[in-house]
Length: 350
Image (cartoon, rainbow, N blue to C red; front, side):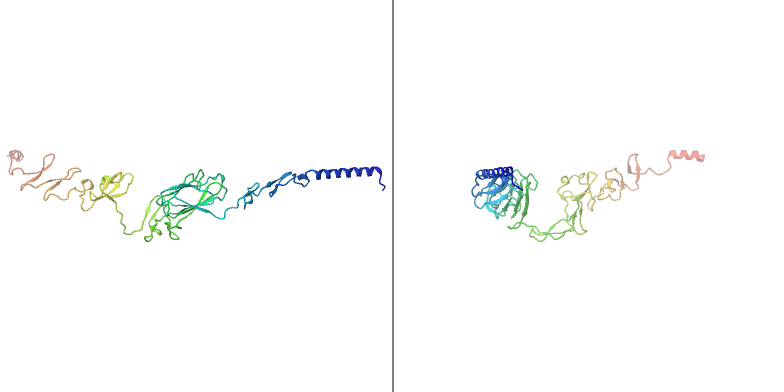
């Protein structure tokens, strides 16, 4: 096919346009959209970071030994996380910081507070460790101040009152979680059995104060105490009855009054004295209220009071009513009285 003058002219014009575009690109700055950076110079010793179709950005090295770290959105130059904790020794109020261990000695001066770092600049996993350097927290408590945050979701400071304890606090982004251990510095660690009875009262095993064991005495959730049928010593001593607790509140309780030498039980809002071999049974209890009865005398009722007695008195006396009381009296003289004689005469016609 022959090449015409018109075709040659169009091809030359297209070639000229292409050459001009290349010239303009080479003489100017290639944008990102044409595979360039959009910049005529690159920041020395910095890393380039893409920004879509916009010019690239840079991350400078920052401080020595920094590393390139993601903050979830961008790449930043940050210090390499410490390999462990740095420790400080304190005997007075102190505000700690992330990745710090505080050896807190309350034995030297007294109780004080170690305040946690403000959480505003912390990330998840930030932590501090606070340890009892004097083995004295049980006497002079160490308080961990929450500094506006919460500790184990509680808006209260943490009071450490166990000797030899060590407390690790880790920030989870919401609260300071607490992980503690005791005994590393001679703390009072209490060790129990591998299993125990539900609701059983724990007992110390030996005299160390650090070993406990199971028991056969249980306390239910409602406070009911159950114990085996064995000889038990449970004093119910009170100096006097006036020291007794409320009989209405403690219905069914028993108590001993030392002053009265007697036992009482609580019933119907009153303390009722129990009978014993040295207590006279009152009339109200079916007795006489007396420890002895007058010999050879007739017993006379006297209401709820102890009975009275009528002695035999003279020989031949008889027990006679005077309309109110019984009395010992001399009987009338023997023989036929005038009244009887008249009656007999009428009957027999005398």
